[in-house]
Length: 479
Ligand SMILES: Nc1nc2c(ncn2[C@@H]2O[C@H](COP(=O)(O)OP(=O)(O)O)[C@@H](O)[C@H]2O)c(=O)[nH]1
Ligand SMILES: [Mg+2]
Image 1 (tube, rainbow, N blue to C red):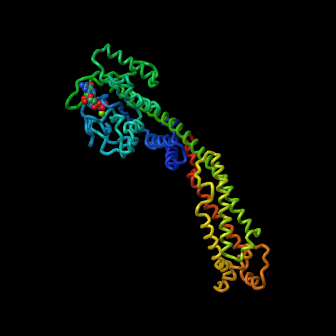
Image 2: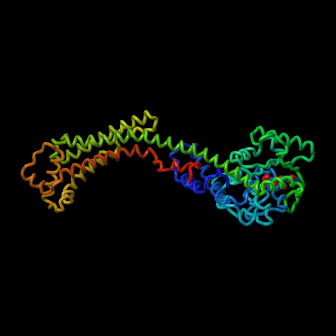
Image 3: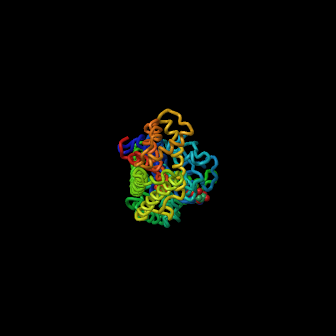
């Protein structure tokens, strides 16, 4: 293969990375380009670079009725057949080649029903000729079969009927091929019998191709002219002499030296096209990641300070005067937590609004379930205090003592100025570290409650960029 061709390892890395990215991350343009890049890498570049000795795939393309199938039959000197194909309109491709088809056709063969290969009397060694359906034939997923075949071809033959070329029929196929550096033979088919008229039409066709940027110079020699001829009923083709020019042109690219050059040009062109697409995809992913940080940052800061503020209020004794009324305490604590979460939400939604991100009315206050969640978690915290004491000391707390112990620990956590009486002090001494552990666990609960409230924002940020993906989405990196 050429010096510029990416290695199979690199291609496999890029293909895997393209499978891995969650395209919710990027915009519509990047989604389309990532899909194209993935197909070109997995279905053309990787199999082609892995097996450079495999035959050259030459796709015969053009609009319906241009005479593609007739020309391929003429070259083969018989009617080509493949199981499941109904003539005269080709709806499924037919590959005319030897028994073993190049791996670049594997993906298409898997995707299309039926057998697409005719191995009887194969074409010149080194090439596989592919008769394709017209561009309006689509597979079950809605993709144009002809486009996908053209995208895995090494060379192509664009067939245009003399009465159709004027409206640029099939030019978009030539453009698609040119974008990948595919060597293209232009056939002006079904020409009228008068040589003079043929010359005029061929020159005009060459001129149109040149002006469309599909041919370097308007040389009529660059075009293979074929006159409308008599079709043999039994082989559905023209007399062999009619296609001598086309056959010679195919022999030229099938020549071992020319083959390598043709293939290298297509590999280089396809690599360049993929690389361009990858730049757009990488940029979109990086932009999306930066946006995630821009939007996520204010939310994270606002909510972590909200959790911290309630914890600080507890430590400074803001709830001291109701510490002996468990019902009032839980209600006040839940209300305070929800209020702080609501303020963090307001701040976050306000920032998002200014940053142009979508915000619903509900985002400007705390989540509807937050007060109830807070209540349940504080009740759980309190009910777990005896078990926490057991965990710390390894001693069982008897049920009657549990009530007193819970009250003593709660008093100590919520009232920094609380002076325990002798009984309480004795009780707490039996469970060293309980008050500190209980306070710590309460802070965790507070942080958990506000974090849950913040998921209304963080879940809207979309998936995180998988690590290493940007470096992987590059064909120019060494393996
Ligand atoms: N008489 C005559 N008919 C032709 C010629 N080329 C194609 N046709 C007819 O035009 C129709 C379409 O040709 P076909 O090869 O199936 O076109 P495709 O859609 O490009 O594959 C068929 O009925 C062919 O027999 C030709 O040179 N002479
Ligand atoms: Mg056909």
